[in-house]
Image (cartoon, rainbow, N blue to C red):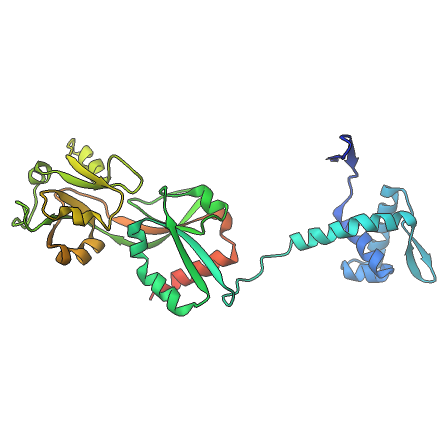
Length: 313
């Protein structure tokens, strides 16, 4: 196969179809001026090296190297080739080098997209990083969609921390489980239902609700599960943030179904009571997402290794 290359004048020419191994031989021979040293460099027998040189001469229509005083001296044409080709071969060599190892001694920033709640969930991990790795900076940005695939692929983001309600399968995204948790329904101690130890579905649907919608959804997991029961609730307030939602329960008759981990932290401060929802709601999972095309990025591999060590503590 030939390769078309565009010239400055707008014309095209066909690049010669030459085995790259022959160009490697040319480069080595030009630099060593010795067939035996070239054979050694390329891990070839001297006979195989001589045969390869013959093929290259035939392909390019020039002697390329002439033996003079026991040295292989380049012809004018070989010198011309060397001037143009050797830098290109060096570029190829540099371009195909493996990743440099990640050096924790260098200042490094990891950019992680989070919601307000997932950033709150990551506190123990972040504290561990801050105390263990002084050169690591963790930059949180807003998670504007549940899994921002393009930003994870093009290095705008290193990770996204989000949540899911079921096992996910993706051709492009890998996920790491941080933890699982259940939902609880919170209400003010002044709420008419606060004295009940157990909520039934009738009570649950009698009063209005607060919906947490990080990505401006019109429904949530509670609505999905109610729909399976052919029921619906009334939503009075829709908010994008988990951490502020409980504050809207104060002095109200609203109900709020939210992650248990945060609800337990905030309930006493806001005079809330927590009850089990009167319907089956799947547990949620907090996950770190990254793109499959970056699985061998030393920077990400190092972070994932530290993450896996931490969650096993």
